[in-house]
Length: 295
Ligand SMILES: NC(=O)c1ccc[n+]([C@@H]2O[C@H](COP(=O)([O-])OP(=O)(O)OC[C@H]3O[C@@H](n4cnc5c(N)ncnc54)[C@H](OP(=O)(O)O)[C@@H]3O)[C@@H](O)[C@H]2O)c1
Image (cartoon, rainbow, N blue to C red):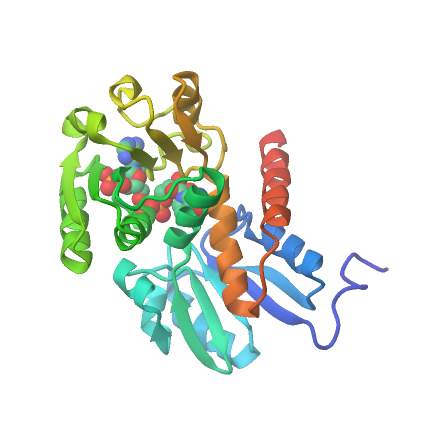
């Protein structure tokens, strides 16, 4: 019986994909397959569930099967680096890889998360972080990627605020040491006292993410300047409680879906050397998210 792949998979179809554990809820296959179709590329993008025990074998498999490119998601972004031939300087700084390109058997690791945020900031919010003061809430993997990217983009100063204060202090110290950007780490207790001198605030914690949609980082939005831009990288839901409250206060906002689309676009551009159809990718993400929320 014919299925929807009968028409599109050929003997020369190239393979792209994503590895992670769990992987069943990933939005990347919908986003990338929509882009590949729009570009008319003979490629398919597949989710691979890979346990932490099998990361090395997955990299050997990528070489053996000639898989052209992989995205890497939780929990493998750090571990995968041990099995690559080369790591791009930005990914080295961040200490994590979210994109691997198979360049005729040579596996090269990149991190497009920070770049994805930067492009979303510039193209969707019209904001260049150069010379601006940024507060990053959270000190996990996404905070690292965004923190280093903003420091490299010449932000004037970074404040990293995290529930576990020691992680914020360590990340800020590392960003300062590696890039020279002024950066300090604080706990949530001190967060509000830094808001008045914040131009861009970015939530990188999972607070507000489905199903905990009623949660929000512990900040008094009214302490921020009226001109501050409030960003949330949580994309499920795309309008988190933080984004809703910030918008209601009259401040500019930037939700997380754009970062997701632009980090994917950057990966596609690395793999296939083409300009990614970002609008198609955003539409596919929105459709997939609405379908997930309807379940
Ligand atoms: N839009 C995008 O493209 C994009 C890309 C990457 C990630 N994300 C989203 O970003 C979020 C974080 O991802 P990640 O990879 O950075 O995760 P991670 O490395 O596990 O870091 C999680 C961060 O959230 C904080 N956190 C978790 N639960 C908390 C709570 N109940 N109260 C206060 N802080 C809490 C953690 O603080 P502690 O250090 O105190 O534990 C840590 O700073 C996720 O929601 C993810 O979906 C979005």
